[in-house]
Length: 306
Image (cartoon, rainbow, N blue to C red; front, side, top):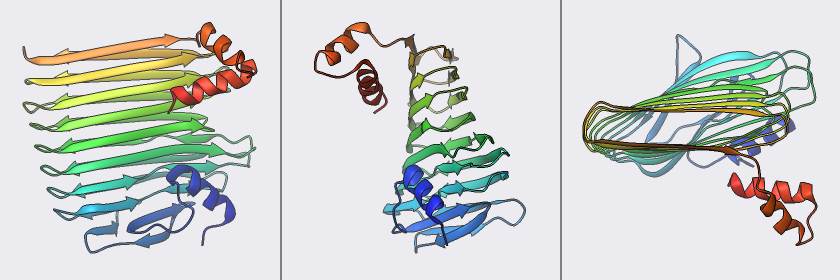
């Protein structure tokens, strides 16, 4: 059974206040806590390493899968491998995410390696949220790795969110898209204190008509550091767009490295990057409405990261 801290973490990373409907696999402190399968979504524990295989039958519609991870004991370090096999013409929502509450002196770390095999004409919405809490000296470390293999005509939308409490993260995402496949990524990130966050995306557009749209919005505060590294490779007639938009505050540092590689004359690729502080006129406008400078900053940041 989940304790109060673990339930609070679940609410933060997966918006779960009770056991969800549909398929789910909840991992707590390195062990399976709760699990449920459906007629169309099967969850099988791996035998050789920690992790699960998820099989979603072709044609599955309007079903969801929740696979959150929570760590509430200090000193846990784990690597988990999850493989997703999404059948042709399926249309599903997958909610992942990891929450770490560390009140001890040892570092706690979760490294999740996710591989997605998305069948022809399938649609997947994937939500991954990271959250950290606790007043211990031990760090909260999350290093997610994601591999995407999108077959013809498939579509995947990824919402990647990290707003609070994670001391160190190194997110690596790679994708290979077949003809007509499309990938959309929306990343929202905030760092503070001495936190460090690295995000890298490498997308290969290998099939004619494939497309990718990768957008990161971030806020770096205090003494934190962020690096956003995005590379789109167009090998055929295709379209790709990558964008980094960051607000920098205090003594923070941000590095944006957008990369485009066109290997075909009809590969249409675009990159955009903008890093800057909050505009003074925005603060003044809100302060004339009665907000303090701090309240005005928070209002602007919350709107920016929505």
